[in-house]
Image 1: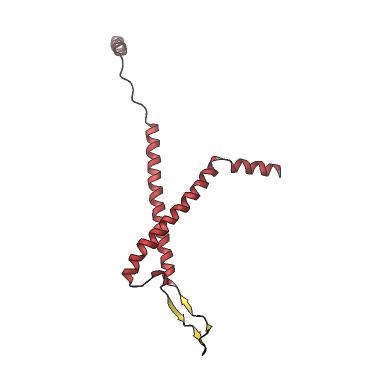
Image 2 (image 1 turned 90 degrees about the vertical axis):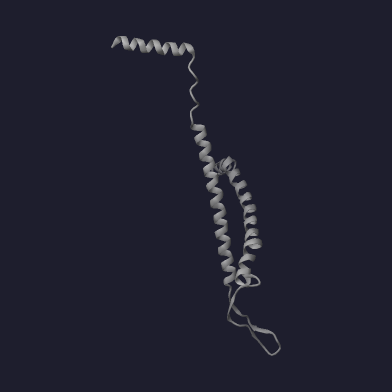
Length: 145
């Protein structure tokens, strides 16, 4: 049991776990933004285009409710709630698109930084002494031929 606790402490206190926790928190906030984008901006436009008052309430009645003489509901209506299903599909597509775009630019940015780090520094300009030594070396090579 002691080894298990030690292993768990080592796992929980690693930087990766903390980074992951921060990612989950930021992801939750990002999800709220995307949900607001869908519910408050995109779906009203879709609702206007389809003519429904509220798109998420769109449904087809499979069996109407049954009411007795006193006006009490005896049997609930059976509904096919396709509007909410379509809204959830739109939510998913927009969230997936936003995550794809964010990851794509993050990966490009990381690759760009990696390439900049790998690029060797340009060689310094040779000094006059180095140039003279190169000339001497080249003359000696010619004499040996």
